[in-house]
Length: 372
Image (tube, rainbow, N blue to C red):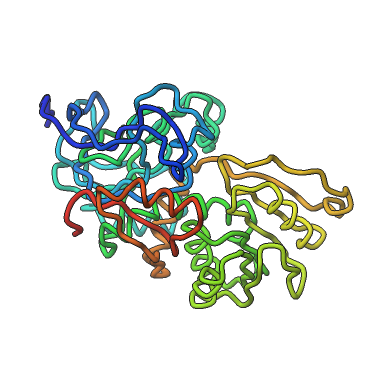
């Protein structure tokens, strides 16, 4: 099925970046042409789109898209309304998918059908070249030709969006639209960060999570499902309370000394000083993973002794298709659920400003259609 419609749709269009707190970004709800899917693409009617700190970075030009105007938003839940030519009948699982996740999705063929009415998710990674050394080795997250939803192509703060089939992520049927949206970047990138921290295999460990927003509150639930102890560091007392309710063994301020050294840590706050604090709290042989696409102020100078002892400081960059499919399997297996604040369509600028100052508990999702 191919839809060549040129009818209009509504979308939040970013024509000029600016501060969400000063309100000088040119981000407006506009009537724009509804996109038609090209070869290998589907069009989705968007139900909900999660808000992410990366959206803030795009709107405020901390990271600069290839061109303006652009429609932000990259945690998209929608239903197929049109298909371009050259699409498979079913989504193809990644070749390196873990056996348990492969069996899970094989038992749910309706979630994989590329057909009108199927509910699917879209994350940050829209497409890659498929031929470079990174793509050929299961590391397509590092592809130099990668294109990103809501950045190098229009995203999900709109009534409709087109997506390459490779950028689609199947969703567990038990999840409603609002609960699924924040999983599609915050959840998946947190999963990859835990993988890099060594928390997805091996014995239980003591993990530190620095910052506690959309991604961290999902990573905490996943870490607990894998049997790890978790300490949470965050400046907000409300966020510390949420962390405790979700299973954190200890919570403290962002710069607090933990009761014991950490085996590994993931930093979610996009501030360089937090990465240094995490490194200082980690024992020899430990790993600190920086989960941020932009780090305000860079990483400040620190004593070499804080790194010495074979500690590792690394970053997480995007995610792979394997990460997305496996994370959604674990979401269903462990009954991971986000805390979500719903945002009515006209309130997006206000919600982005609240996200910037840490006033949102857990995560938030922009509602484009009545939730299912």
